Length: 237
Image (cartoon, rainbow, N blue to C red; front, top):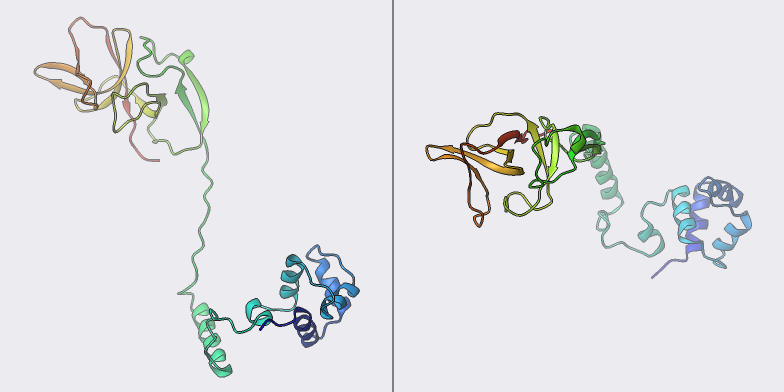
């Protein structure tokens, strides 16, 4: 059976030796401005405090278990089946665990990620330019996501030739260099086009390999205009 809110408030106030004026003054600290007449009205059950007012009252009157105080026995209360002596013992044990420092709840520290100023290409792969690394082809932006430590610039992919590992329009980070090993992923210039591919060097020749099987390898022939711009940046921040 629910208890009358006003009766509980009046009882707890008197236990703490506070007047209705004291309660009104304490409520002002919670930005709740009422007169002692309002407190009197609550205690007489002529009016009911709002949720915000009631929560503030519980703070002022040290009411920790709202369910038990205003409704009745709380079936979920950890001490529900203990007598007074058992409750005291349980609280003593809780205090012992707290003071041991071994069972303290771990708080998560929020680490603010500092943005990194990076160059991102204005031209996607396959846009084509033999002077891809010219400054006029890039813009500098603050990147708020983790970027490989060895990255020099980023490029947005164009097409699905490197799926499933790399998606269309994905921003991929590169480390600028002119020499790659067979098996490296890199950014290449070939006959007026720029490609993101896997480099394969074998007895049969040099090839740019797509990960998507529907695209055939592109052979780099002897008299082709070919450059290596960069290697895929893979180091973690």
